Length: 147
Image (tube, rainbow, N blue to C red; front, side, top):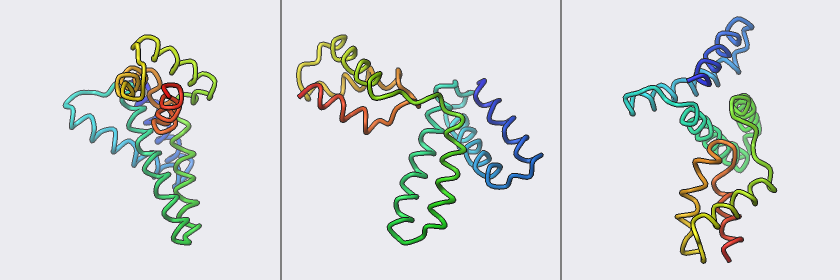
């Protein structure tokens, strides 16, 4: 809840400062947050808001990649600016060493023995790292440690 209020305050500040790029990026993510809240029929927790933001960032990263492949550096740059703005609202990302520790801890807690247990480990890890680590990167670390 607090994170959503922080985002709304940032929107007001962007509007007062007449920063169109920032305003538009924040409006888009607020719309996604409100849509998710409407879908769930309740207010979102900060962790859920972080997940919505992380999803928006992931979507924009894919767009950047496609724009670059299509030779549209101008559009890729605009998407990258939006990514930078949205990342301000996420908690600090976890470093590789900390991710390795969390994965090792989750493997020990779940008693995972092989890659077949990947789902159980990921299920335990994702709530702990929500919005602070990329799922794809986390998956690779888990696979490496289980191998």
